[in-house]
Image 1 (tube, rainbow, N blue to C red):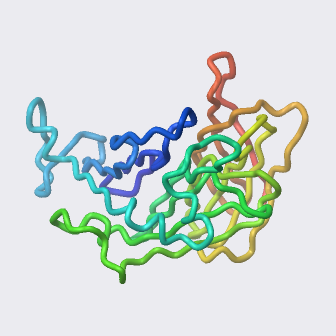
Image 2: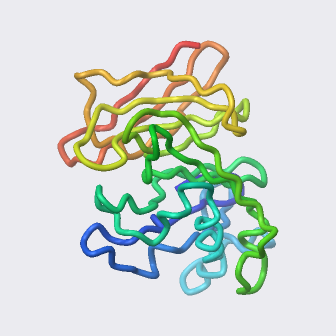
Length: 235
């Protein structure tokens, strides 16, 4: 999920299952929900929607599925199973800044590089059901995160840069790592290296506060017995 006023964005994995690479249409949807400052679903005029009207706040599209196969190198893995051998493409992170929507791929990891795809929000949610045209933005941003390291989440910073929560692309879990990068893919910097005492299976990250002095984050884990972890990064 991601938030950029006035929308919450929700993206499916856009990947097939680990078992036999089964296709499920519901995982290939990108949606956004228009909300007011209090988080209530609203229509285009800002009127609060309730009950059976709530669906009017929701827009869905399959156009991201049109763009992912066009991603340099990573696009060849679109539609493959998510097992360690097939290395099928799968989304696990998303961030929105202005008209740019960024999706971070957990897999594939190719030669020590993970991938972000940048697309245009207006092109994705254009009225109608036509596929994304060949001219639609689909910029691939490769990032040298390390061997078999993929993107678990993305979070935007006020200065326009992206935070990256990284973990295992496939196979055994590893302690998480946190990177920061310009939206062009330049100036990649590791902020939190892996440590043996870090919990594994980190799956989500949100920025609580970002100042000139420090960044405060909350890290979430895909384990029932692992509580969220607060992280402070000095600048």
